[in-house]
Amino acid sequence: MNTSNRKLGIIAGGGSIPAQLVRHCQQKGQEFFVLAIEGNADKSFFTAQSDIPHQWIRIGQAGTGFKRFADEKVQDVVMIGTIRRPSFFDLVPDLRTTAFFAKIGAKSLGDDGILRALVAEIESDGMCVKGVHEVMTELLAKSGVMGKHKPDKQAIADITRAMEVATELGRLDVGQAVIVQQGLVLGVEGIEGTDELIRRCGEYRRKGNGGILLKLRKPQQDMRIDLPTIGTRTIERAYETGLRGVVVHSGNSLIVDEDKVIKLADKYGIFIMGVTPDEQFK
Image 1: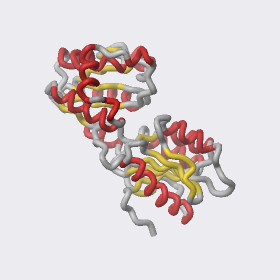
Image 2: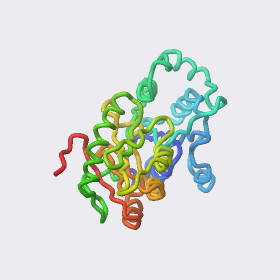
Image 3: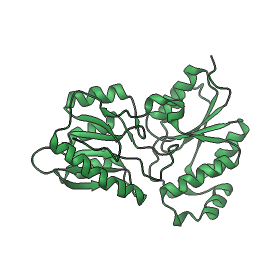
Image 4: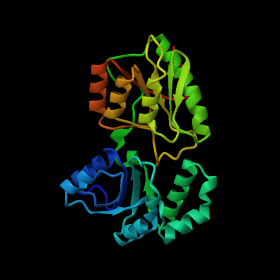
């Protein structure tokens, strides 16, 4: 049975959430159309399911994509998935995208500012931008410990320190993640993304108890776009580099395949926890 009479447009980057969202729409009988970002979205998924209504576009073809959404009579839009650093060819803009960057003066904006401007541009066409959590509520991280393993006193101190750093990092629109071990900040996330942050910090690991990874939503961040996200790959990377805990912003971050993530963390002896920036630990 159709649960919504509003057609959903999906702007799909990398990772598994776009595929989860497509399957969710198929199961619920909701009409949808996908703009798959070349070099990011999973080609094998769209090849294996030829019945998925979609179009491939480059990052620089946002204007072309908006027109296709209008032709498809899309009413709501979800932007989801990771975007790799684009090549020069990817960035060659169509006419509308050129006008968009000229209008916002993109060089003066951080990632958050560009995304907010993009949301405004989409909604100027009469579409409504939604967060994936508004469509799939089960993706939002819960509060508290989620698996068998719990943080000890040192880990809690590291979480507290990481929250202080991540909050300031977010205010500056730099990144969402930080790794702390035994009170020392091993690294903060920049343009490289969380996987590379974890790998890099493995080189600075100290002897003794491993560190923790914390991901927080930026204070000014729109809940509809680019929420902090973890999945099984995050846990694999954490295990490979000796981390003993992964902490996320409860109610403000996404866990992809939560059951699999928790099962893997339990296997590796890693704790997973949802927290809020103002939380006080005892």
